[in-house]
Length: 131
Length: 131
DNA sequence: GATACCGGTATCCTTTAGGATAGTAGTATC
DNA sequence: GATACTACTATCCTAAAGGATACCGGTATC
Image (tube, rainbow over all chains, first blue to last red; front, top):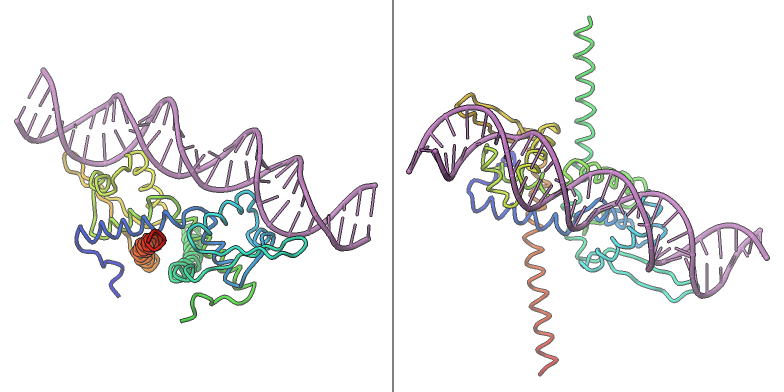
């Protein structure tokens, strides 16, 4: 447990800033990571993804899928049925992001609890003042 | 080693999507995580941060600092010197993001290697074709 | 007296992300 | 024959993020 203070010198700090910047550059935006999470349950079709990620419009979904494919995170396969079936699935390279995603998932859960606790504390404080 | 395939059912998947979405909402943008990384070496003043994060304009820096303070990730302290000294430092709650940041840092480093390796492979392939 | 530092704010502007809506070809279903 | 599904694309538009530039009061330095 180092409480996150692993960086002690300027060079290491700059290297860390650059590495995080690179990551942010690749997985930027509201959707990319969510799509990779959604694809963890298995390959999905376009409309399935659209239903899973409520409120994503087809234009945006299509663009994000292209981005993810270009970066090698997903694979697009067209099956020659009638009408065509298109499935999207995570590549193995997408698995390299698992740790990042898991930590973000866990932090999101803890943060929600944190917020709840804070508003509970606040309510207590108000009550104490009134009484 | 589960290769990131820890999510097997729809409810867990939706919960994960929501948790990651929450995290993304809080640490969104180009700067917030980078600022927290930069503050790992210790408290810093406004101009120091501005120099550290090349290309951030004072307006944006000031806004991001306010956001981070509102979310409880940093503490702003004004010292009554002449002229005033203002320092920003990470709070303990910022440490809760350490795992996320570390994973992003490591992924960024590995990704850069990955890209390099890919372009080396590509160069080899081209050479093979020419010969 | 000119310039520079500090910690910003003010104003304006560009770029990007993202959303709304409509439409496409080719089935299949009612 | 009308409607619905799939996997999108096209067009238009809004909102937000982010950047450029200038400036402020106060001090210190040259």
